Length: 150
Image (cartoon, rainbow, N blue to C red; front, side, top):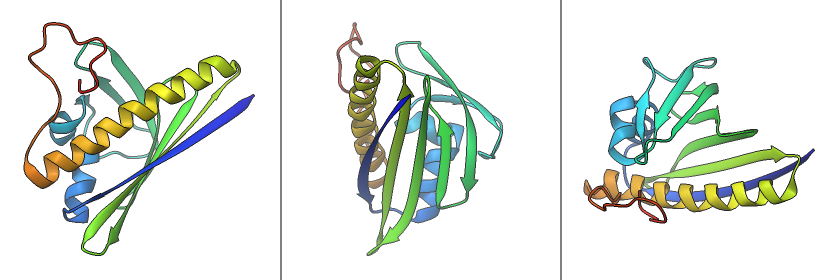
C-alpha cells in the first residue's frame, strides 16, 4: 500500500484559543468550513459528521486532541488530517498535514489533488473569517459544482 502526504501552512492574526475554537466548535466550523455535527469538544474516539454545501457528508473520528495545539482526525477513505497550531510572532501558525493511503495510485493522486485544493481554500477562508469577519464561500450560485469557493 502506498502513502502520500501533503502539508499546508498559513499564519493567522488571531489568539491561539480563538483559532482552536474555530477548528473544534460546531458553531465556529459552520462559519468558515462546513455544517458540523458533534457533541462538545473534540476528544479522541469522538465521531463527527460534516455536511458540505452541496449536501455531501463526511464522517470520521477524532484520534488525537491536545487543546489548544494539536488535532488529528480521519478524513475520507483511508486518510488522516493533523492540524497543529503554534504561536509565531504575534500570530498563529496553522500547519495542516494530510496523509492518505490508497492501493490505486491514480485514485490516491486524484484524492490528494482535490484535498489540497480544498484545504487551500478553507485555510484561506479561516484566515479571512478570523481576521476580517468575511466568509469567502459562495452561497448564492445556482450551481455549486466546479466552484472553488463552496
